[in-house]
Amino acid sequence: MKKKMLFICAAGLFTAGIASAATSANIVGYQKVTATGKYFTTGPTFIQVLNPTNYWRLADIKVEGMNPEEDLIQLLDPQTMQSFGIVYISADVEPSMEGWWTSDFSPIPPDFPELSASAGFLCNFQNAGIKFVYAGEVVTDIQTVDCLDQKYPIVVNPTPVDLLLSEITVVGMNPEEDLIQLLDPQTMQSLGIVYISADIEPSMEGWWTSDFSLLPPDLEIPAGTGFLCNFQNSGIQFVFPSPLN
Image (cartoon, rainbow, N blue to C red; front, side):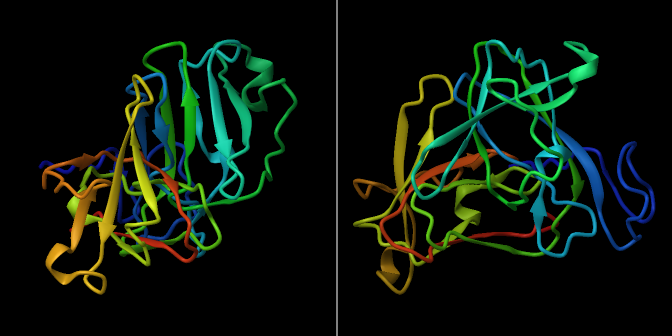
C-alpha cells in the first residue's frame, strides 16, 4: 500500500490559506477528498491549527462542485441518528452566500459547535465529482477516538493518508452486540464488520465480518472516509496510527 499525504507543509513553509501563527513544530496543509459515490461517508483529515483538543469546525471546510438545490450533507446525531441537513454554497454558485447553510438555507453561524477529530458526514449527492477541501494541522501522534455514549457515531480515518483496516484497532467492542458498517458509496449497501480484541479471544484478534469470516488484510480505508457504527455498549474506542509511520 502506498500512503499518500497531499499538500503537507512543515518547518515554517505553509500552504496558502493556512494560519501563519502555526509554529515550525506543526505540520499543516490541505487536502481534497473526492466523493466516490452518491452516499459518500467522509470527514476532516486535519484539526484546527494550534487547537490542543483535536477538534475541527465546519467553517474550516470548503466543498467544490456541490449544487445546494440537489446535493445534501447530513450530520447525524450519534445518540438518536436524527439528521441535520446542511449544504455548502461556493462562490461560483452565489458569491454573496459563500459558506455553510442549513438545507432550508438558514445561515450556519461561524461558531457552530466544534466537532471531534474523526467525526464525519453522510452524504446524499445527485452530482458526481464533489470535492471536500480539508485544511488545518495534522495530528502526528496515535489518535484514540472515544465513542462514549454514542450509539450511531460516524467514525472516519482522521489522517491525510490511506490506512489499512488492519492498522486500526478497536477497544471495548463486543462482537456479539456491536456493529461497524462499511457503506458502499454507490448503493448504500453495508458490509457489517467487527473487531475482536485479544482480551475477548486472543487467537481471533483483528477484524472479521459480522458472521465471523476473516477480512482480507489489504482492505483499505482511504483518508477522510470511514464507518457508520451501531453500538449497544458505551466507551468503545478506535485507535488510529500516526500518519507519519
